[in-house]
Image (cartoon, rainbow, N blue to C red):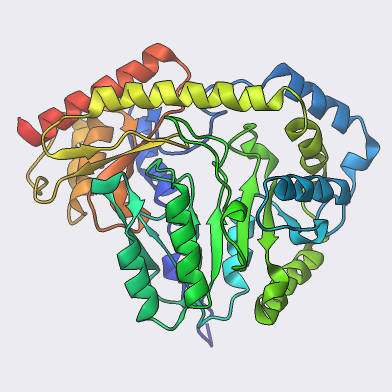
Length: 432
């Protein structure tokens, strides 16, 4: 090309959760049966939608309005419903104008970072969820800025580390938190959220909170929204129906803007997000029309409680199968539907392997592991030996070795086989 057309952040657009699938396809094409543990799609793993939720969707589809455009910001009645829900919690209060719909949280992430001034940086947790870390790095053209989650403290944010990084980097404009966290399954208590809000207040920052898993909490934890503890700090909270209904195919997510008018610059920035939505006309109409009817149904709290209990049982099942293996650290999740298995420092090397029966698969693995990080090496050998597809922890913008597995498999026998096979593979790989 006459001019360089490549954005400076193009190389930052990585997504290990799906990129590992391209490798897995090679093994599948060589005759291996795959067990997909890479992505958080409950439907793909066999979860069935409640009949009463299906019925609501049928009734909405029968309404001709569900087939047309809606307002750029979203269906007015749905936005008013969600604003009322925010206000009932106490804490920061909003109006329907503070609710803005997107085509899924991924769309919201792209625009929230993309419409920031390039020099304005957002610091997020490590391990990081790839959609956030890649979008922030691509927006800035630099490596994503991170603060540590402490694996030896149940993956809680290292607040001293966060405070130090904010203090000494004046380009940081916002703090990202994911609660419950992906990929670790950690749930932050009130005091942690309050301290993060206080750091933002002290340094005149705004907050971005990804709360897509906010109603999937267990092990004695209660749902706690940022709006309940944020005080007067400006914030953007990301919510959606993909994980809790679950309805990932709806591509229906929204942001709740808190304390928008407490800061003129923040207010102007949020206005640019709405302006960007007007260029698209609207987001998904039919799912938005379903939201008040589903979330406002008297059966919905019971639905959430049932799913939380289900994931709690699976988390304990996975933890029991995988804990205690020398050289690994496994914290039992308290929210979302993931578990992170971390390797202790120095336990991995570039000589370790697993037995692979298929010679073509073994040859493929031996080529793939040349020059990769140690946890990618384990993931490739695991894939070749067992067909289990997990995501390496270093793929989450993280310097620690490990991997993430889901708690989504609905087939009890298959799920037990997966966890038991993982445990066996870890012992063979580390200690044979």
